[in-house]
Length: 286
Image (cartoon, rainbow, N blue to C red):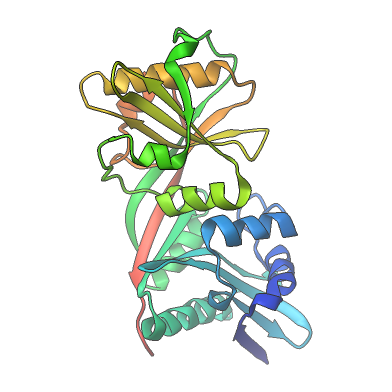
């Protein structure tokens, strides 16, 4: 008979094992190691108390990983071992998390599902999740043209200086991993965030926020500019300057139209790639 339980902080090895044994999306999943799981905890705010494991006897048969912030939670992974699928285990663990959050909060629950994982998207639909938006991954691929920006116009600044630079507040609908809180925690715990700014006469005209933790891929976290007039063109020049110094792909992941239109991304030289469905529901008590 199956049993289910929420986890504690000392259950990290168990959660890693359950993920590696039970989470099988299309194309498989890279085994998670302690460093990667630690990154999920630090940068994405995975809470072990919002994670569940399902067991039958000595076997791990299911897992749910979830992150949590003050106003919303995000389901990061739900997996059921292939030998135990279609028996209701997946729905039970998703429902259990919803019932817990209906009492303790936050009630708003999100999920980000790659478009090629239609099975998981359909499953979440049966759990009362509804589609909220679709986002696109973009990439700049080397080789890159030489920069046309004079080096003296480029400044490397900190996140605090970026916050005080006077860029307009963004109303973009951002994915979980690129929200301001995630960016701050990436820097706090991993010191992996760089901010490059393009200097004007009396202000910064544009800025790029980049995560360089992975040497194989540079990840853009945010693109900012001072105004809608010349701002996009200046941001494009700054982007191309950064790309010209890179020898690896530069990617901008899970970009919604509210953050950047497809036409503007193409104008900056980005090529579109995979899409992601963003779903949500409100937690309900039993």
